Amino acid sequence: MELLHEPELWVAVGFVLVIVILVSKGVPGMVGKMLDARAAVISAELAEAKRLRDEAVALMADYQKRAAGAEAEAQSIINDARADAERFAAESRASLKAQIERRAQGAQDRIAQAEAAALNEIRVLAANAAAGAAEKLIAARMDDKRAAQLIESSIKDLGGKLN
Image (cartoon, rainbow, N blue to C red; front, side):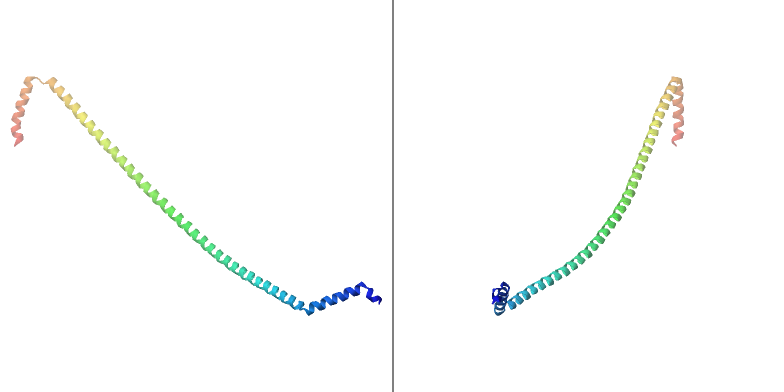
């Protein structure tokens, strides 16, 4: 009987009794069902995570493909813009050169006109000066008698010149 006074015995009896009560109430089945349910939830979460990961990888590949396409398109646009800019620059240079040539030709034409006008003016002034000088010379050397003789001779020659 001394065995009944041992605390280890009563702990063992209590433990066995708790185990028997738990087994009789179906606790191991409930724990198994709860663990199975938890395992199913974890499995579903893992499947969802795998599906989301695969979807993210597919989206990333699609975005990388789109980015490469956009980069190629951007490079094409840049190349086209450069070609357009070079063509515009060449056209602008040609247009500017033609405009400069037209203006230079116009300036040369105006200079030539100014030279011609100046020469005509000089000729007119020279003719006027010569006429004035001739008039003064004639007036200085001409007397009334000589003038009458010149007029008569001019009238006589006039008939021959008219026919």
